[in-house]
Image (cartoon, rainbow, N blue to C red; front, side, top):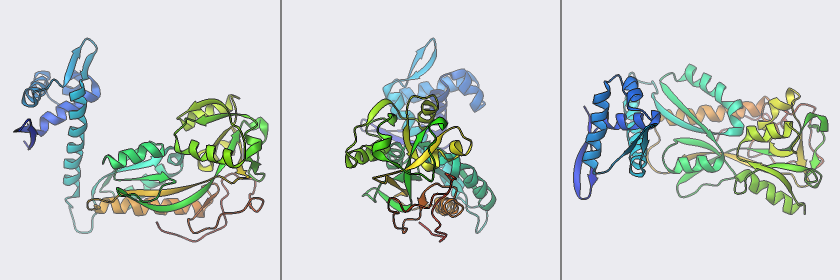
Length: 350
């Protein structure tokens, strides 16, 4: 039994790790009975752990309703802290290496939603082969959410875009990529025929919600092209954007990596934007504070390798290594495959 100490109202109280596990599990499943099954305990034991914790903290952590256990505001705060404490304990156990030279540990990695289909599977396979002692936890979201989770300590490292280093994080440049205009197959967009932004803006657009980083890029390009956007619908889901375009609700603008498979299978048509070109830069974000565990360093190296490999083999559309100069309008070499990238073959590191 491992205790931890919590200071409340000037008093220091001991909280048992088993109580924290009970708290988090009940919050996740909403039921003491189900939590007891998952924890391999009897129901009264879980109930007793929750009540003891509430008594020690002097706060009600759950509302007991007909529909199950629902965390109170105090409960949500405690669940967040308890989950983080349990993760750190798991991480510490995993970092105790079983043998010299073996990298072990828990690593929580954030992937941009648009990159997950391309990177997740090969990254997991490579880590399982090269570092089987690493337990990888993947989270996908948009850049703004991922940055918040990194700042809060919920991620060890993450892909972000259009971001420089800040006082709280280091941003290691990985690549630059052109944004593409995306339409139903019947509209016949082609990878070798860039579309001027003003022409794309003549169509109703399925757009990311205002405030989204991708939307910020699109709005800036619209101002540069002196174009007015006809926004048909807004969504914070890349998959929903593509579904709505397929259903004929308008065109959209997305990074090429997010639509390569759709174009290859003929479910969407797409072309790079021009006049102006619209680029996003992708970086690997890591916290500035604290030591970097060997497992996190290993994941960062392998993720960088997977990104560079995708650029080398042309599976990341329009991607360039950071040192590559931007191509000017009318000077693209765009064969008829949306997976084609620049001809640069240099192996780079972040």
